[in-house]
Length: 217
Image (cartoon, rainbow, N blue to C red):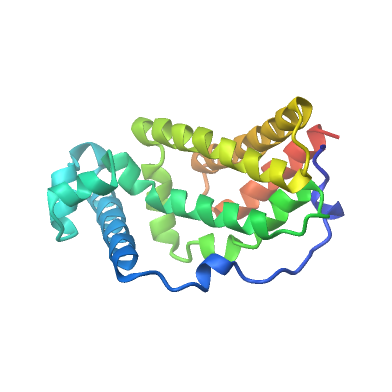
């Protein structure tokens, strides 16, 4: 199970994610709205005041929700800020599940991610610049690492399901592949943050993942 170069990955068109076509119940819609409100408030306050000065109480107040509600949805302000990242990772995982089974694993990872690029791009350069600075905060970097580590197991599980093989070697191979891919995403984000000039994150992701894929050949 070796990564293939991006150029060798044929573009396969698939249907829209089924999860997006369902109608959630009222309770789930309220939960989703509350999480999003807390996330947006957390990001806004962190950009305005700096993460160290922001409290969970202030986030809840800014979102016009109770402090207990904040605790029900997020264990920390870092988690509230990174909620958007978590949602994007979940969207990617769903897109990966939708890829054709005949598609090579590395291509499935790349193409499922690329299919979401349009949704992930931030057209507001000033906001993207501010977010880049915010992401350098040590507590956010540490929490992001934990989130990616947990997500790695989910990606490996989907890759294994796609392979239809459940052996120790197959489980090891999918875990290594998932770890390599997510490490590429983490490194791309770190490099993007460190670059002296601000540019879109997506080209950096593509460049790094091209290098990661080539190293496996």
